[in-house]
Image (spheres, rainbow, N blue to C red):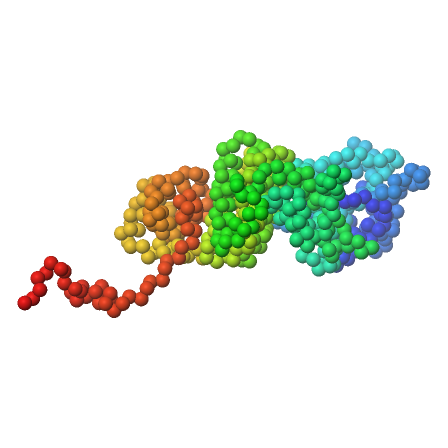
Length: 574
């Protein structure tokens, strides 16, 4: 249940025309009154003899208790109350009770004093609109201090009483919601989403791994945004604003948004706080970075580096008591997801975009992030951006699957960290991001796991039995589950590769399983594959070579050993 208090207006009749009208897309169905301040207000929707002007006149009567110069110009209060998509449809009398509770909680019509005149209009199954005149019956103004928070608190009680979807309480760190006017404009212009949302995502991606203000601003321009900066007399940039080229006002001027209005952590000072650490590997300059990233394997190498950084961040969240360090790891994880979504292959891009969008809420809380602790993740985001797009096949797909496997655990670790600190909205957002990351992993991992499983099936039976014994010795409690999974074949191939590379497969497997719980994994064997290959620095994608055509002599010798040349010790016939 989401109550939203809208900007105050100056025309009661004008708002009633909208509430009782067809809507911008004729989405208003059967508009009618469900409740009012005295239960007797006329209903223009159901009573043929009532008009919207009649209702407006009754609501505005308290204005006439005041002299003309004392009447507030913006006297129209407007609040919408919307149910969650999975909530059952409420009856009119239930919505009437909800409306009365909201106006009482917000101070519009408190139970212990003279209130304002109000009416609740329903024109859809899932929400109502409450309109009120901001002058009480005694001529005084209502107390609306913290009315938004009071409405949210009452909504949480309503959810419990009506057994509705429970909305996580906020903490004031969420980005500003897109207004209805911005949404309607986007619909009118045929945009996929509102300008505010498009700008917020573009700015976030520009921040990912950026090492300086100049680089950040250049990325904004490269992304096609219009950029304005505010410069101090010293020449330092103090602030910035961005606009979409096609988003213009009535005078055909671009509509600019300051970074802080897009999200609290997108103000320039908050962004610059991320630049206090070195975002490039020691001994590597910014000028060297692009050249280093032009190698054919750059996308895969960047993803392997990101997997290592993600794993280190998981350990920080699990074991570090420094909240500033943990908050920095979570915020930098958002940069990694933005960079990964920007450089991902087409078949994973949608899920990764959604994961990055969901995690954006998880990356921001009242805990101050100390970004000096998040160098590795910020560097990984930078590597991803400079390495360029991955094609989603072969090495690229395997590298993406490896990093996504790590990022699922990192998102879950972030959710757990937030939940321990009662950051409800952030914890929920991290869980939603993890779900999208799992879906992206399934898409990226399909080909490389198929290759590894095929290689595992070709291993000699005696060697497979040997690897099965290794699994039982290293993971006595999980072994039978692992050996029964489809991914066991891929794990057998990985153990064979590890042995050939000189590793102790039993020790490697035990270490891979001990680093963190496996209970949240959809496939334990798949997780062990990627952990083992990362820890042992094994190639992430190594398809079996095509068998060479055997010569006739080789075939004859293999199938008819008696035709082979006699051993040298045999005496020649005389």
